[in-house]
Amino acid sequence: MAALQATPLKTLAFSRRRAGGAALRPRQMASFRCSAAARSYNITLLPGDGIGPEVVAVAKDVLSLAGALEGKLIRVELRFQEKLMGGSALDATGVPLPDETLAAARDSDAVLLGAIGGYKWDNNEKHLKPETGLLQLRAGLRVFANLRPAAVLPQLVDASTLKKEVAEGVDIMVVRELTGGIYFGKPRGFGTNDNGEETGFNTEVYSASEIDRIARVAFEVARKRRGKLCSVDKANVLEASMLWRRRVTALASEFPDIELSHMYVDNAAMQLVRNPKQFDTIVTNNIFGDILSDEASMITGSIGMLPSASVGESGPSLFEPIHGSAPDIAGQDKANPLATILSAAMLLRYGLGEENAAKRIEAAVTETLNQGFRTGDIYSPGTTLVGCKRMGEEVLKTVESQKAVAAIN
Image (cartoon, rainbow, N blue to C red; front, side, top):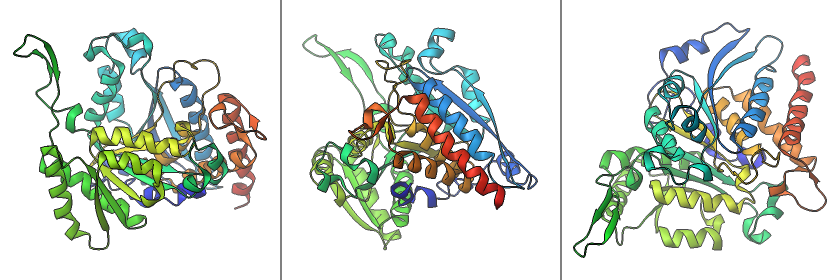
């Protein structure tokens, strides 16, 4: 896709060398040494809850077909296994992330997640919430950097809630620290204050090494893009942010080609709506990144269009759409599968190093949009309204149409 291809994700070499320089595991490298006739990979699918199973099913079909079209002599064989996670795992096993699921994910070459959560489990105790399973999965895979592109596609600029002149040309990458900060800091819990009132408390804490490793990833991302990095914090109030700003500033000397700026999170939230084109790459902590990346996604017109990758220093990476489980439309064939399909493309590129297959999927999504097919979240007058399955079928048709070209080459 033109707008997505402009982002640096496709040029970051996470496929064979993870952020921080750690090489892939020996078993993964063996996959690249297979004969020219076929390269084989193990993919763990975690459909999850709500619309998750619907969009993952579509993405699985697209992945399989795209991998099979490498040409006359080369075929990418993807072996899939589905595992329970989130609410579905709670219902079946009593925990949001069964040991079997985590073991399978760790032993795979890449992991594709649909979505987790739903009203059914909202009142569960914290350790029995679906979202706890996602935090456990990220920790178990040791992924620490979440990369979320937010690029406004030319075909969908009118779907943005912002004025066309504001949204057109926006291309932002949010690099979010994923395993530290207030979501994981201790102490945390409930207590009673001196007045006898119940209290709830959490701890925002970062070590220097945690800040340095995410900042290095962000500087490298910016280097592959337009050379601008904005670090977002709340250093006028929070000590954790004061340390964050000091460490990021100190690292800037190692990247003299990158223009570094700093912005308080409240101002960043405002500027994303006021003038989003001022941003290139944003790096921030866990909670700020959680909020700002969702805000940035809506500039593009729909959260249903955006993929993400979570990477670590070694082991399999996690790929997922940034949207939630949308229980209100689950099972109604209304979900937009394109974010999951594009997450599958990221999986091929950064998880497996299969650039051609990734491009094939992105080109198919672009052509499907060019043909005017839209799910409800991105529909506009003059386009063709379709459901999740039909959208997937149209993408598959476009991928299939490349078969003739592959056969000739």
